[in-house]
Image (cartoon, rainbow, N blue to C red; front, side):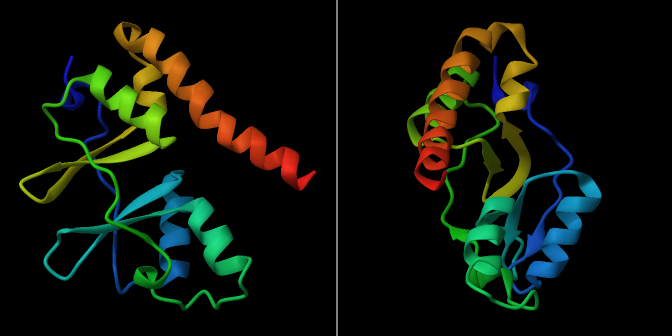
Length: 146
């Protein structure tokens, strides 16, 4: 099974010079936790997650007018629409990533998330591993905080 068969094809994104407020509102309005960040030529410049906003804006006391490019994660891991789903699951597991932009010819054509893997029975055995490994980092972090 290829990524293009399970990915979300409707991509909600932000421009690198948009404000964090705009990005947060877009996440809220579309009930998503990550946005691909596009440069002036509509090429992938980075990714912004809800966690990035908490850690790099709120926790550091930056204003919500901060440009996305100042707090995004640059050069995110990406996958191709024709990549095998098992490869994607392995990437997510090894790198502890919950969402990946799907890029074709330098353009973002979709997003794939752990949920997309879970929704397809063929990948279920890989999804369990991905969820467990991605969650380990979160569980360890919670133990440090509490």
